[in-house]
Length: 264
View 1: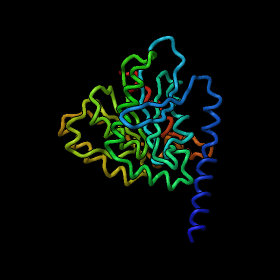
View 2 (view 1 turned 45 degrees about the vertical axis):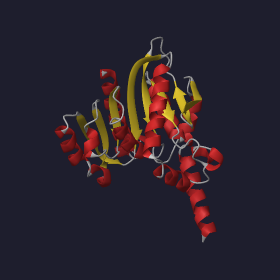
View 3 (view 1 turned 120 degrees about the vertical axis):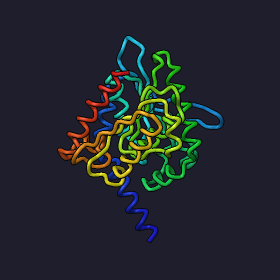
View 4 (view 1 turned 60 degrees about the horizontal axis):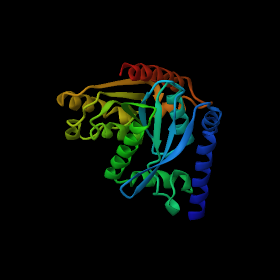
């Protein structure tokens, strides 16, 4: 039975990785400078993917929080798209040091191991990692001092939660992630913008209460739901086999996101 499970898990992982070959190819063909750096804090070393825009001026930093699937090719491709739009993208692998033999996301044998490890991450460690990577980004010579955060799925929830722990954020962009606790919302200093899928009852059910709680706390929360799209549409909408609803949602969300980024 265990051999069958491992075989199925391997096939699932292989399918997932193959499904993102298009993302890997885009990154490899990108003209923008990209690099992996090690951000150290306390007893942690966080492997972080950084992509720079082609700009003569200093630019804002966007902290990118990956899905529950870890640091995938798609996350790196998204970081590159942010750089193409004119922003310094810093995307930490939050499984750094947590994988087999002290590795990160790419050291796990299967996707199941990745998702379980992410679910087991200590929230305080996540916050410390994100703060360290954000500080690293802001200290880059090419940075202009402005900081944003964005996240997807599990990372969407983490981006909302990070807004409760970071006072110098200009804005938080939450893609189909759950909100933090009501009491924690009181600590939010930045506006929070939500991007949700119409066909995502689990997450969509959290929106009405989040709106009520954020309003009660006197905070800005502006959610938009994209009809017909499924959970994960920012990734799925870019894949070669994307359906029209996911593709339209991704295009519309990108347009809105870039307008909001430019606002600050």
